[in-house]
Image 1 (cartoon, one colour):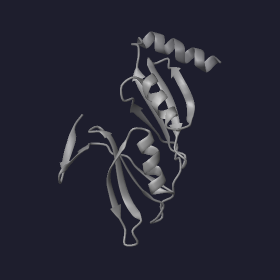
Image 2 (cartoon, rainbow, N blue to C red):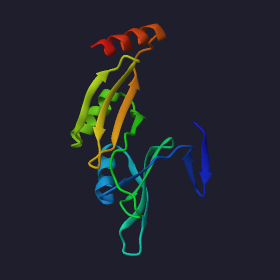
Image 3 (cartoon, rainbow, N blue to C red):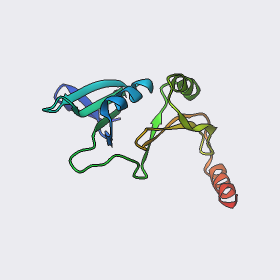
Length: 149
């Protein structure tokens, strides 16, 4: 992955930014997912106006409060994030930390094993691990079967 050096921090080329209702609670939520809080910026009143969480050099997310005309919530976008090691072991750590899983561990027809969690503001995060290679023909058959169901 290509990264860019900004001041003393190296950022991946794509860093999603989400708006949330409660920044401190969201930082705790991501900490339970295994992300570290790597930056917070307080506003004049002491509340957090910008924060960043990261799991590694390639997995970083910015977040901020619902202000300046931005509102939290799902916009039809979800993030597909490679699990930190085994997706099954990661799933166990996440559920043990009290994070509710909205889509259970599933072997997908395209060869990934996934599970999904939803942030309280509606953002969806699907964690995955590639478990088998699938030929284009096999994938096409699986899609056709799903469409006919």
